[in-house]
Image 1 (tube, helix red, strand yellow):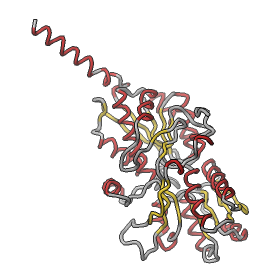
Image 2 (cartoon, rainbow, N blue to C red; image 1 turned 120 degrees about the horizontal axis):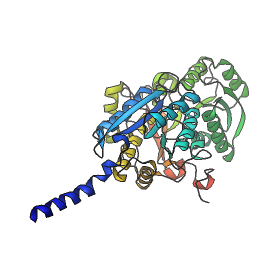
Image 3 (cartoon, rainbow, N blue to C red; image 1 turned 90 degrees about the vertical axis):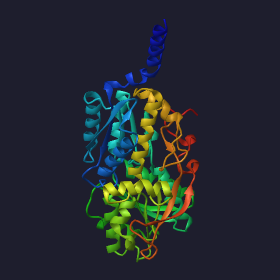
Length: 402
C-alpha cells in the first residue's frame, strides 16, 4: 500500500514538473539573428551581435526548460529580399522559434512581414525606423534599443536649445533615414527652428562631396547627418576635409555609435552631441559585461550589441516562465515582466511593441579629456523613458487603443 502511494505521489510530481519541458517544440529553442556581417553596419551589429547573443545563451546555462538553446545567424547584405527570404526559410524549414535581431530598417520591415504571417516573435535592436512600432506594429514584435524619435528628440532638442536653429539634412535614402529626418524636423519646427534644405544620399555611397558642398552653400548653422555606420563616418571625414566645421557650421550626427567615434578618432569627433541607450563606462555592471565583450571582440560594444544580449536574455526568461516556446505565451510573459539587467533598468514593453527605457545625451570628449582607450563620452543628461520615446497618444499603431 505504501509503495503504491509513493508511486502515485511520484507520478503526480512528475506530471506537475514535466509538461513545461514537453511543450518545447522540436526539443530545442532556436534563436535567429539576421545581421549585416559584411557591409556598412557590420561594426554596429555583425559578429559582435552574434557573440553577444551567444554570451546571453551561455550565461543562461545553454538550456531552458531542460532543452538546448541553439543560435543561428545570417548576413542579409543590406537587401530586404534576402532578409525576408531568410526569415521565411528559418520559420518554415529550420524550426526557428524567434528572430531576435534584424539589422537595418528596410531589412527589418521586410522580415517583420514574414514574422507576422507566421505568427512568430521578432525583436529589433539595430534598426531605427519608428514605423516598426507604428504602421507596421505587430502583437509579437518588439523594438528594443532606440528609434528615430528618441534620437531626434535627444540630439535635435539639445542642439537647437544651444541656438543652432537652421538646419540642412544629408539623409540616407531609405526608410530609416527618411524617418530620422522627419522626426528631427518635427523637433526643429516645434522649437522655433527652420530646415533650409536637404539632400538624399544613396546607402553605402563612398563620395559625399557634392552633398557637403550643397550643405555649405545653404549657410545652415547645423548640417544633420540622418544616416548611420560607415555612411556617417565617411560623411564626417569628408566634411572635415572640406572645412565645414572650420567654416562655422556644426555637424550633428543623428545616429552615432561608439564604433563610429572610434573610427573617426577624438580629434574629429570631439564636442559632438549624440544620444545613446548604452555606454560601457556608466557603472560597475556595464563595465563588467563590456569587459567580457571586449575580451571576445577587441572593442567595446555598441548599444545595439548590448541590446541583443538584453533581449535574448529577456526572451529566454519568458520561455522559462511560460513553460513553452509557443509565441503568444512567451510574448505575454515578455510584456508582463519588467526588463532589469546591465543594459536597462525598469524597462517595459508597451502595447505598440516599443520597449521604453531611459536614454542618454552624451558629448564626445576631447583627446585631452580621454584618459584610456574607449573613454569617449561625457554623459550630459538622462532622458527619462516617458520623454525619450513617442507617446502612445501619438501612436499610429492599430493595436493601441485611444
